[in-house]
Every structure is written in C-alpha cells, then in structure tokens.
Amino acid sequence: MHSRVIMIVGDKMILNTFGERIKYLREKQNLPQAKLAQATGIVREQISRIENGQINPTLDTVFKLSEALNITMTELFDYDVIGKKQEISKIALKPFVKWAGGKTQIIQEILKLIPNSYSTYFEPFLGGGALLFQLKPIKAIVSDYNLELITAYRCFKDDKDYRLMIDEILYHQKNHNEEYYYQVREMDREPGFHDLPNYKRAARMIYLNKSCFNGLYRVNSKGYFNVPSGKYVSVNAYDESLYNNLSTYLSLETISILNADFEEAVSSATKGDFVYFDPPYDTFEDKNNFTTYTKNVFGKEEQRRLSSVFKDLDNRGVKVMLSNHNTDFIRELYSQFNIRVINARRSINSLSSGRGNVEEVIITNYSTDNNHVDNN
Image (cartoon, rainbow, N blue to C red; front, side, top):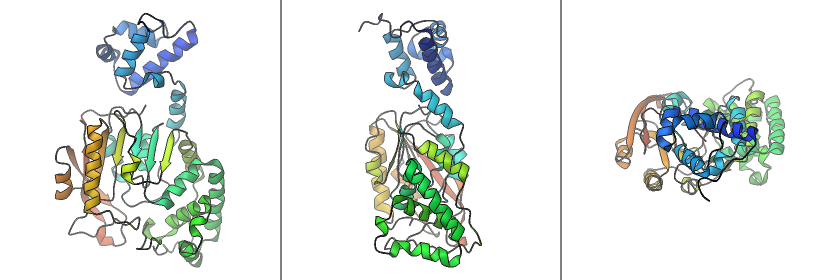
C-alpha cells in the first residue's frame, strides 16, 4: 500500500479518538512533541494536528508513530486499551497474602528502575504480587511454583469461584479458634485434598495465611503446611474492597496466571517485553535463611539455571530485572549486567534472629537512568 493512502478516513470522532490515543501514549512516556517529532521524522506541527484530530495520518505516518512509541500498529488502534487502563488505574491493589520475600517495603526502589516502556509483563516468581499490583499492566503473564497460592489467584480471576471462595473464607473466619485452625491446617494430609474444588483450597490457604504465626508460609519435605497458629482470638481474612478490586483486575482476559517452572513461564517473552524475576534468594552463610515456600529448595544449581535464562532473554531483546541477596555468588553470575545495591528489611522468618536489615541487589540488562513507567 502506498504511503499516500489515507489510513483513517472521514469520521471526525475516529480522528479525535486516534489523536487522543497518540497523545495518551506520548505523555505516558514523558515524550514532548518535539522529541516524538525527532524520533519519527514527522514535523512537530503535524503531530500536534494529529493529536487534535485535525488531519488523517497516512499509513507511513502511523507506522513511524508506532515504532517511536514502541507499540504495534494493531495495538495503536486498540482504543479499548485506554478505557481499560483508565478503569484499572483508579482501583487500589495490594497483596492479599503475606509472603516471604515480599517487595512491599522496597517497592519504591524497584519502581525507579522499571523500563520506560514495555509490551507484556512477565513475573514467574509471583508470590504476593506487590510489583504486579503497583504496575497494574493490562497485559501480563504471571506464575508461581506454589500451587496453593496460584489456585487463590485463579479464583480471583473466575467469577463463580471468586464468590464461592469468599463464602468459604467467611465461614473459616466465623469459626476461627485454636482447635479449628489446626483442623483446617491438617486438611492437606487427608486423602482427596487435591480433588477439592479450587475455591475450597484457595479459601483455606488465605485463612491459614491470615491466622498462622507471623504470616509465614512454610511446608515440610512432604509438602504439608506446618506453620503453628498465631494464637489470634479472631482473624479478619476478608477485605471486601480489596478482594473486589483484585477480582476486577485479575479477571482481565489479557492476564494469564500459570503454575509453571520459571523457564517455561517466560518462554513466550519476545523483544520489547519485560520480565521481573524475584526468586527465592541466594543464602548468606552467616544468617538464618528462608527459601522453603514449596517443598523444592531453590539452591545454587537453580540460581545458575536462572542466570542462564536471564542471559537468554537478554539475547532475545527482552528487558529483564532480577532481585536477590547481595552475595559474591550472585554478583559473579550477573557480572556483565547492571547491579544496584539496596538495603532491605526481612520481616518474615520463624526466628527473630533471622529478621533485620540485609543488602539486596537489583540487576537489570538495560539502562536505568531517568526511568518511568509505561506499560502499554
């Protein structure tokens, strides 16, 4: 098709909507019109007229705009994305469970280093989802190896399971006492536990997380949850506003929730996507460490395999960020990438001696200067 062929024809409302889309994407990336003009070779005055719905852009112009804004031409005309982003941006989200390695305390440090723009967001060690719920990307593929946790996420996504899960949580909450806690805890030892409906397993996991000691999720070598009771007189396991907001967000068709190995979870990532790795951390030799939120311990060999996946993604043009402890082993694995050291506080551990300030690293394969968030 020749570049002089008109891409958008006639309708003033369509021209205005397209112009608003271009302006929205440009401003989300903090791009002045002059910068966009420089990147596209389109004069600034013409960009201004496009944004104001005053002219029909040619196919050649649309292509240049999509390239400069790091978005496909198909997505450029997906006006529904604007509505979705505006709706999601208004709701408050945060983790619904307390989770070892959660990023709530250092989330502001991480947000400073998020890529300027990306297409699909990947998080293969989801945990409590603190970063996911801060970014609220419209397109995401998230995963965790812990099936009980992922079952809960999937119940938030499915409307029927969500309503049944809430009823079950309220039932646990109403019947809570010390004896009841241990009855519910023992359910995973019983034959047929894995055949229970998703909503029952999800409600159990959330109830135990809210009522166990220190919000710790820990399993033994057989995979059985074995954290003692927190000895609370009553528990509040249901947050109506938060849970409804989580259901609204996670039920988006463009959010995929997996229970997969981290390598499989990022296998579809392509150039322009963003992957955040938050694995079980490498251990300090002189500290009590926590890495057992599944029965499979994440040791040195897994750390090496993860670094290989990181490097493969880098070769494929994917933007990658990883969090870990600041150990010599980790620094050596990622020596060719950008490493930033931050101070963090560990708040979940079965022993008080295992809590306190530690050094972590945030590793990226891209420049982190003047970063801001734009998740198309």
